[in-house]
Length: 228
Image (cartoon, rainbow, N blue to C red; front, side):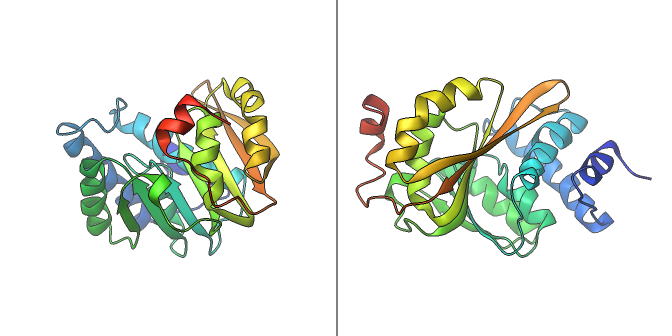
């Protein structure tokens, strides 16, 4: 019997096996268990997590072909969007970076339990060495796009993409970020709008067209106080 989650995935062109569906159930169980120890999510009901976190993460396929890509997920938190993507797309090469060690500890246990090979880094993205390197860089619910652009675009290789998963106020954020995106070597490719449970969502897709100057990203304090 197909669940609502499975049917919604089929609308994205994704069909998952029972084994993969069971991984999502295990993911949910571990998320709930760890959420009582550290604040990972305010969304805890079974169907809400599957739709508002797991399905939303997989909506990335609306923007890009995920076959054999090298992806960096910045500030992944509880693993969104990268872990749902890895469950479905085995050949995705995923690196996750997060500044909070407790979240990395959760992700270590989660990926071990789900038998997923994912690179986990505890640290700040500004200190990450692999600039101009990744096919895809993602960020979901991390910061406003103007700040986020400087934190993420420098790590995208030329001809790669930065994809920000955003809510309904994304248009205003984008307009305030135009200068930063240009300085960092990006151009807006497309905005993809969709709704989940009557809530507006958007994928802001930035193409990397020019190599970013090595001085970016600056230290976070400067990005925050003097955004591009």
